[in-house]
Length: 341
Image (cartoon, rainbow, N blue to C red; front, side, top):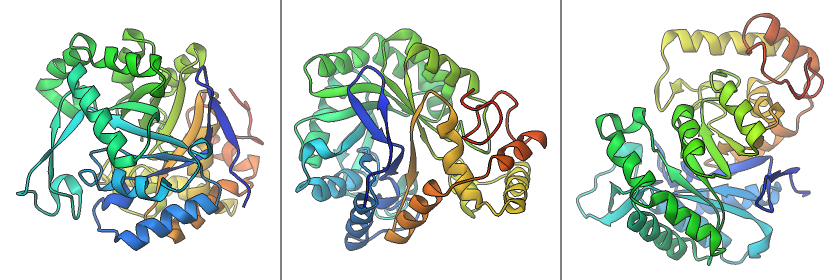
């Protein structure tokens, strides 16, 4: 199977497949995934040409990194791009129960936020051990932001900016142990503050620039001008654009559900699967390097790969824009008006 097309991550020498595998689902997000199924899913993704895999210590309380590392152990290190995250230390804890933080069967570790220099370095070293590699291609600060941390945001932001967290990332990059540094967040506003505070290579932004919502468009435009690559996570908005009732990791409110149904109705007029439109739409923006989709079975891999490869008529994008379902300034995929912005 030929590889997926790839795009360069500016200034890093890395190229990311335009469709990447988000490995949270493989760690049992909401529902358990057994080890053989996880391995088969990773193998199916590899066979389909996906060469960008994103994981994190938090996913399944280290389960995701362990599974990804086991799969990659006999692959050539130059054949894939691997990203993981810092910001939480995983401390042993035998009292962890099923369902913690949404993980169906988490391993016996408790996540503790730590964005300091020491915390970043300790998290990085733990990821190297679990993944069985000597370097991480992309290292991301995980879940920093006001919506995530509320009253404790300033404490964590200070650790990152004045407590050495960003400095640790820069040292790892300077030493060649990391090729690129950035943020992995659900909030574009904090990403905008971060790229103003320190030189970052990329932002993994989940759920905020999708077919469903484009409120982050000005931020992406800024990234394009600054040469900061954007990886779009959550292209289905936690599953809402793939036939599920979740949005932002919880039940979808009625107005959001109605918008998703309107998007689906327009796509149906042109015989376009909503999922195919959702995967292809973000890639039209010049800042976007890759789209990450969570997959928990070989069948989901095949479905996502097929949707991403499906040619889509330009008329569907025009219709979505004409009916007010896409931001009037958002770049549209090939075949649509205002191509590439």
